[in-house]
Image (cartoon, rainbow, N blue to C red; front, top):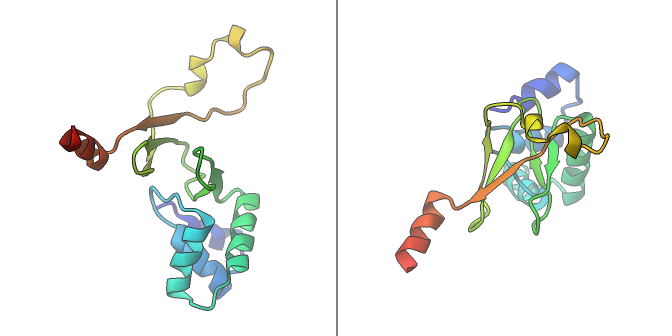
Length: 143
């Protein structure tokens, strides 16, 4: 689990029922949901929760650094609660499934000093793309 609920409790984040349900929806491994997906899942648990409340909670969680916004290109921003575990993303080009991956080594080592153009590099974002097993089977079966 991402430990989001525990981190928020430790920070003393005011845990209203609406905020709690948003945090519960986001808590876990390999969680990458759009704001609309968070709202839909939260509404199953708390039908009266508004879209605005979900957006406000997400914005606050991002500001706190407890949730990261992830852009995958062509899709709405996704919200990732695994901010305290450095990782990269593996995205299926077919269905959009996303998995957190933890490649070995220092990703900064792949950028030689002469390619940094004097920048002080503070972070790296690497996105791996491919086909998940289901999409690969569908492609192979359709060939």
